[in-house]
Structures are given as C-alpha cells and as structure tokens.
Length: 148
Ligand SMILES: [Zn+2]
Image 1 (tube, rainbow, N blue to C red):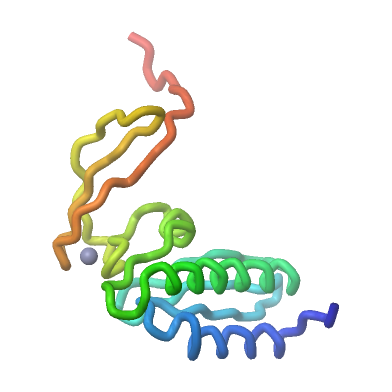
Image 2 (cartoon, protein in one colour; image 1 turned 90 degrees about the vertical axis):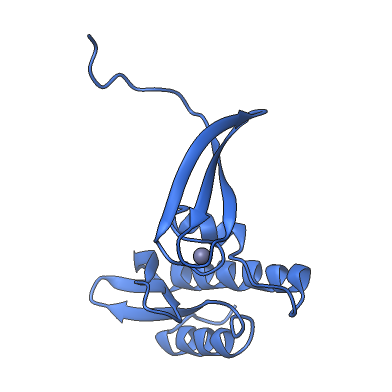
C-alpha cells in the first residue's frame, strides 16, 4: 500500500470534485493543520462547511474521503443523472440531519414526531426549496432533567 501524503490526499480530493461529486451540491476539501488533517464538506452555495474529521492522521483523512467517494458513487448510480440530486443518507447523517437533503440549507422546519415500527419519524419541510421529508430516529432511552 502506498503511503498517504498531503499531496496524494489533495489529488484524490481534486479528482473527486471533478468526478463523482461534480453534479452534487457539495465538494470535499482537505487541509493539513498543525494538529493533523481536517476534512470538510463544502457547499456550492453560501451554507457553511461541515467538518467530517478534524485533527486526523493522514490515513484517517484518506478513509474519510474514500467513504464520501463511495456513498457519492453509489448514490449517483442509483439516482442516474436526470433526477434531482438528494444528499446520500450517510452524508445526511454526518450533517446531523440539520440540512435539507435537496438544497442543503439549514433553513428547515421541524414538524411533528410519530412512531413508525421501531423508529420515530420527524416531519420536515424546507423553507427554501419546499422539499418535504422525514428524519428517522431510533429511541435510545430517556434522561430525567428535573424531577418534580
Ligand atoms: Zn431545500
């Protein structure tokens, strides 16, 4: 296995941005800082970038970038090129479910939560592009905040 270097990471990111991610709403960016590598999703509009990895090693950065490449490729194969692009689930989850899966704005409106089988679903609408979707949650328990 060849050694992962800052140069090889930047080359990989560039080829992804020109290739698999070309028709998506975001690109990927890698930076080397004093404490290690930072990998971010950067959006093609004015929404702020999303950090996927900070202070990582070169091999962690490489794995992180490969993960995004894979989900983007699978997503592209499933969606084809003529349908509207929605954020792949794995990336949506990495974004914390805080952005519209179509236009990536944070200007979204949470609605009611309902139980569906083992999952909870929370209805959302986008203020910008009017997409409607459900965020899906698994209930893990509860925590008393203030016992009466
Ligand atoms: Zn939207």
